[in-house]
Amino acid sequence: MTTDHRAQVDELLADYRRSRDQLADVQRDLAGISASATSPDGAVTATVGAQGVLTGLELTDAAYRLRPAQLAELVLRTARLAAAEAAERTYRVLGPVLPAGADPEALVRGTADLRPEEIAPPPRRSRPRVVDDDEDFEQRDWLNVETHGGTR
View 1 (cartoon, helix red, strand yellow):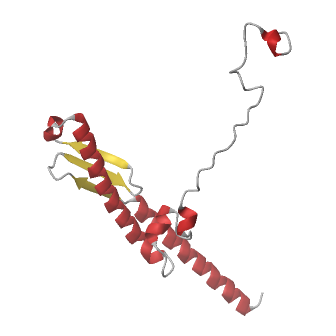
View 2 (tube, rainbow, N blue to C red; view 1 turned 90 degrees about the vertical axis):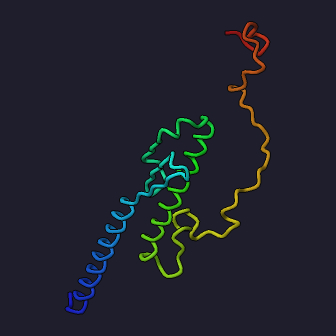
View 3 (spheres, rainbow, N blue to C red; view 1 turned 60 degrees about the horizontal axis):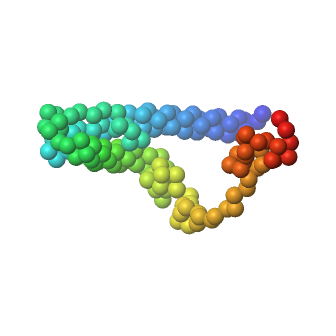
């Protein structure tokens, strides 16, 4: 191998190692993301991880004075606030390592390279029901198997 080729290979390997190190840093940062939110009345505090999954829930005594449906709604609203903050932190971690013009939010949603018409659900089509005789038990007369062309 000539010296020029060896230098090119060394540079490519160095670039690869830098990219891997940067990716490892991003993964560590993402894994460490956590966000909390507290309801306006202070009764509920929700904590979520980077994906918005609830990882902690604190209820004060005031929370137990609420009706179950009110408490459930308060927990959900508070968890959504925490998830929105975790999402913002995720976007801030991803932003610097993405190509220029890439949208971190779209990347996380899985829609980064899709057009709006590709994201929209397909129109519902009614499909004719295909009945397999072996799986159609509705018309079977189990007491008189001979009516279906055979004996058992």
